[in-house]
Length: 84
Image (tube, rainbow, N blue to C red; front, top):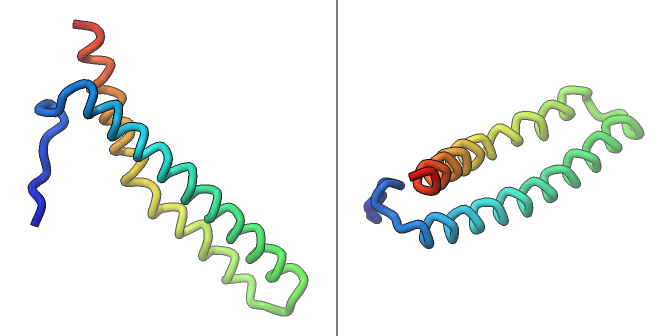
């Protein structure tokens, strides 16, 4: 099992690298989820599908919440180091 290294022990270069990878993953997954959401909304409106299906993509967006929190923590750590 890989040990989690605290952000304070990472170098600034590693923080920027981690920030870019998380940002790329968020953009990619966000676009895929948005496309799936639009397709599902279209199917709910045109077909006689249950309206409950519209809540699935909204709840799936919560899966991105930990990545947004991590990105915020990385940005805070970078700002703290740049202000010193």
